[in-house]
Length: 316
Length: 288
Image (cartoon, rainbow over all chains, first blue to last red; front, side, top):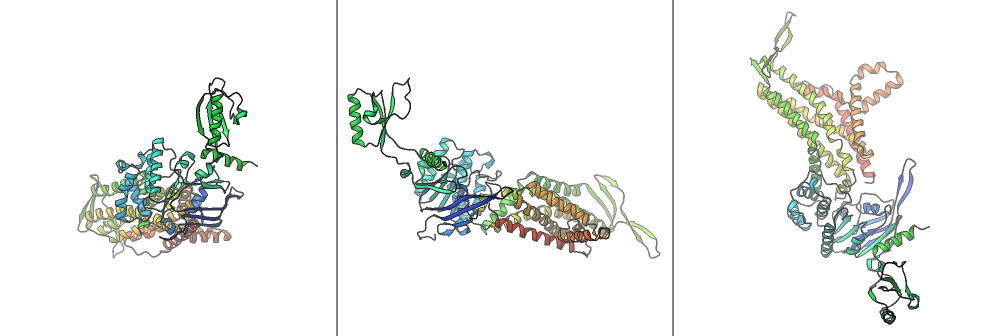
């Protein structure tokens, strides 16, 4: 997309990639006619089990792998063109920056590689190190960095050319909870700046927190695609924690698990009920002398949904 | 242009970060320091009348001439002969040692470029793949140029200052050393791109150097080989790099002699060009 045009940040159409493996050159279909669009300004999460085709898709978008069929474009420019790559930033999984360089030297060299001029590099390096909370380590060699620090300078590296799309492959991999929160905040800040973020992570809770849209891949297909809210929405229901209910079926309550004999409280599910129905059930429970400890709406997590979808897809 | 300079700088720094490169630098420094401080020459009327190494007097070098009457006459070694001989020996040694150690130092570079986590970082930048390859080779060439210029340049300076005889031809060996180093690195690059194996790329390029020692005696060997294999041998002689044979032009240039046969050098350069061509094709076609 040239500035001012309305092409999506990422567009993939009929993308297919097959590899040959082993001595017998057995064909393996890594991507099978994948169609996908990511709008500008979205924080997009790509999910999928190992071998689903996520990495292959990402590599095609970055021009590292050539598709067998179909098209991929970034901001309206064919993905294999260096012109497209001038407007993206990328943090690969298991990146290996030269360990003998300091953070500043590394950013300077990778900024050069991204075509950033000298004046912009001088300005952006301290800014980005500040953004990723690494300013005081600017002159420390990378070999002395922890995994979390490596990820932070890696993100700074991906932002050197002030990209319009940022691809982050497992950005929180190996990072402690505090570091994860910091990285999440950086993603939120980038989103606020209007950048498109393409996130590839196994940490579904992270994706759930920051992504506006997700796609789930399995066996080379995109099997689900939508907003996190839409995908995790379940039919309305509530989880009630209380003392024993003598006849739960009479009130339409379901006992999800075997009750713990040592516990004084039990959990019941009120499925497919609205707020008014719930209040009716609560009134009846109080009349029956049941003591209610907690009531919470039932919501499926992205992880639950992911396992459900991938598990369903895997069944013959 | 900023991008390709970035690749050159990255490669240059990666080579210098290796201990073996530092080792080469130290060896070069020791060699010229040795010449500077341990070697003392007594020069009388343009001839070497005495040599002292670490303060010990060595045999006075002489050369034999045939006079007008046909008698062999022993004379003191002329300054010019001494300087050109020493420099041609240094050039020949530097050619072999610098190339063999240099190849060892850079052997892991291309496989490391293609390793996961590095390859994605480099090739996801807005650079054409051939620009990355070109910048990488230019980085290796710049290290080879710096090291050989340092070694041969310092030796040239020390000997010239000590003797007052400036044999500028000696410096012509620098571009040949660098070019041959790059010819052999072309093989390494191709093997590394095809296999990502450091060991294999070293084995193949060192193997070609060893094979070139056999080709050194091609004039004597060809008549001894049976006809069907003779043409194979001759073809290989012309196709493969004649690394060992190039020692002769290097030494001759250093001595200031005319080089009568450039063919081994040209055919080696041709081989290198083909290797880089194939390496470029492989890099363009492969998934990273």
